Amino acid sequence: MKKPLKDKKLFIFDMDGTIYLGNRVFPFAVEFIKKLRADGKKVLFFTNNASKNPEVYLDRLTKMGFEPSREEIMTAGDVTVRFLLTERPGKRVFLLGTPMLAESFEKAGITLSDEADIVVTSFDTTLTYEKLEKACTLIRNGAEYLCTHPDFNCPTETGFIPDSGAIAAAVTASTGVRPRFFGKPYKDTAEMILSYTGCKAKEACIFGDRLYTDIALGKNSGIYAVLVLTGETVLSDLQNCPDEQKPDLVIESIKNLL
Image (cartoon, rainbow, N blue to C red; front, top):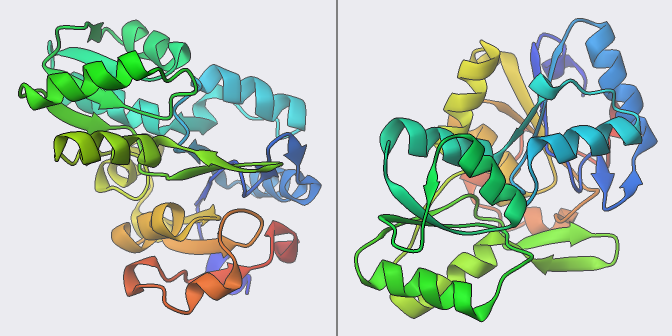
């Protein structure tokens, strides 16, 4: 089980459902990641959850004992910001997202406006009908539609709550327009991770609990994909799983690697 991972240089970890669940940290994940650093491996924490900025995850992971550096944390919001700055410079954006995500966009120099060229939707725990209506109206009037990540549900200690993909589905149902998605499993994310870390795809592996995001990112980009069964996916989900979502390795939890 450990042999395919032995020569990897970059270890990418999904967060919620993989190294912790809600506010419950997995001690074995803390131990494993500390061992990776001691062995000279690169570690990157990547979450599709763009409702919070990276500094929040830095504080959270630090309190959980993971001892991360700011450079080890990346979100789907970061990938979306990079796209807007490089591919849509100067465009006005209407953001259906949390105040934290809005702050990240504005700090990066993106202009947020109700009269926008682009609509970006995300996991918005401050969602109102007014914001949903505004986003749909802009899209019907010709605004480009982007979405930070496709996750339908966000795992919590008490169950699942609607995530970015569920909100995007509502917008699509109303407008008939599908967004361009970012985050996992899309190529923009893999390209940004590999460029940022200076690693090649064959030198990297990703650990995650979702087939259609974490594992699909690995399969789509040549990154070794490890499924952990501590979050959304259960073993029976693999029976009818499409090839592009089939993990290279399945483990009950990261504890199996210690």
